[in-house]
Image 1 (cartoon, rainbow, N blue to C red):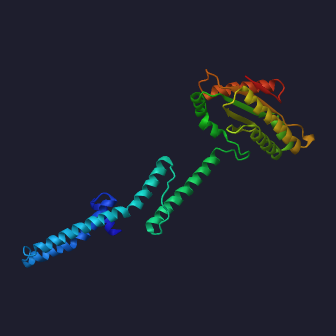
Image 2: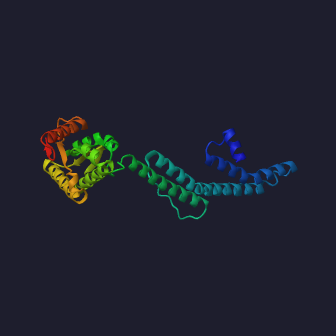
Image 3: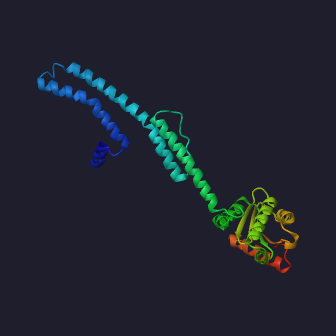
Length: 291
């Protein structure tokens, strides 16, 4: 380390490979330089010129072989460095050779395993950051991160997009009467019903409290209404199996909107769905209102 620090201070060579090559060059040429100095000091430099030429050629060949071997030995370091850079820039998982048992092989295996473990940890943390801990559905942060992308994807692919907003009827009264523990169980029950009712590729989100929404890419009105009906039926079935009849029924009010040509942002879709939800509640709750 002291010699490496010295080379860093003098700034030559600048690259790590250059430092190693400089050391190897000096190492292979020390015998030739020593021979030249000795012959010159003894006055026999010219008469031993053929010997010097042979030694020079051998030194050059040895230097070339040393440099070529060194370049090959530096490949694992370059691969490991490139793997770390690629993951840092693009989160690209490497495919390093891990079958070699020497120090270079262990370096590549360690980099490969460390990046894989790091990526799993990051994926887990990302999943937790966009997941509602009570229901396991996505949370508001997830939809905030993707809302405009959902609109742009639907327009680019020229496919419909529906938004279903869901509210548990009179949930606050139920929660006050039966306690928060029972209220949490109701929310879990509704989340399970949403999962049972939606299609593959749909996205369920708990917006907060007793408010949920389901994004339905590629769904026209009929498909979206079918999803809403399945969610209501699954909720009724879950209530029958879980909640004492004396506790009363659990019903859902829903509002449905479909992406329109004039919609500029995701908020336009949300506002229409919220208006339909309000209409469902004003019309007596326990129903779906579409618009």
